[in-house]
Length: 518
Ligand code: KIV
Ligand code: ZN
Image 1: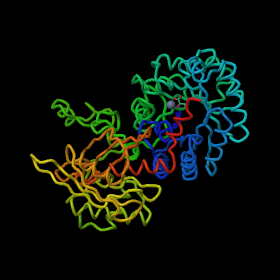
Image 2: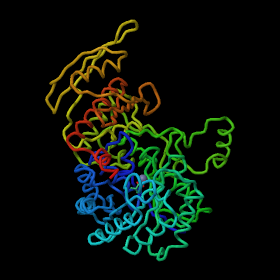
Image 3: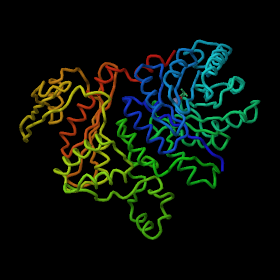
Image 4: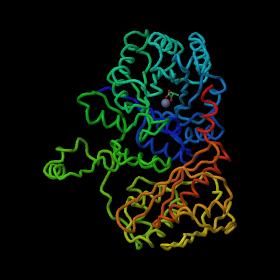
């Protein structure tokens, strides 16, 4: 079977999803999980975008031992130097350098003629060759590039010594036949094509990212690029879990395989969802909550008689297992640690103590603690630096026929009880948010609010996600509690802390927006 290399770009293209800002610690945490999943390469960010992104890429580069860590760069020496700096300490560093090649991008964005594009890319690869043995070159918007110019650019990149050549459908415009045809054409016509790996990189604007990527594999792509849960710019990127399971389930058809540890898919999906604040839709293929649920009587009957009637893959293959009741308030540290190990978490002493304290707190409020509860607690966000704001106390009053009010006390930079405020609002959540706004004195807009139960039952943990905007910065926040109003307050404070962190160290995405067009 042909091996298909997996290039994960959750930490770069995935982080370009609106409102997603991962701090360094979160990037490293996801990177470790991607290592467990067994990705071959992971793109950790765009170091030239901001000092924050450079530092985060460097932290990932130093932490990861079992995958190649990749840094993105435009075709400019300054960007390449930033990737050099960021990848110091990486076991297997790789530069990913790109330049747009399509007529639309050449005319409107780059204002360059074909020969100028070719020369700029050529000199960037030549410069990069002095410092990197592994270079991936991407023809941005390759999908809308003229076939002959695309082939000329690929031939140039081969001559200059690129090791992977990526053919992105940057705007998700193509259909599988067209996209696959590009790979076939390059394989058949470009001299020296056998010396490089061809890579597929698709976006999902027309819902065809997975199909296009599979078409590329059928036509000779050696590597595929994608993200966990398909997050990414606009409608997102190809979902890696979909490709992995398509190749696994239909190996008879594709004749290709990946080195992914499939049973890590569910955990990776969950971690990415929690840390990015991007919920996985219930009907999402492979990792959605309903992906293995059977509702209709006919289906349930079939499943009871023989699973393969309605199940083409088993939930266990991707790491979903029945959520069993595990711990309660009498459980000790030993059982707690064992259960975390079972869930794939090895915590250092300090983190374990912190998690155990949270668990005991929860066990006081909730009789039975399930795996999902534990995961929800463990995946609460860890800040890079002391938090700007902390919710010290919250009280509210609500009665039918009366206007709700809320009182909060918020500490600022660790000073207890430093800000208190009381406010009313259209509902209790609105009152809480108005009171927090007054207490912290920040001008913010709530863009989105969503709530869901982590498990079943009246005492289930509630998980709230908010999206908040300040100026042109958008962030997400998450809060978990047995009380949905407390969870709402925590999510709001989490988002405020992300804004504060973003002011301290501007995130890659924000920086990238500023420099991306040039
Ligand atoms: O979609 C795209 O073209 C990209 C490039 C930077 C590879 O993400
Ligand atoms: Zn992309």
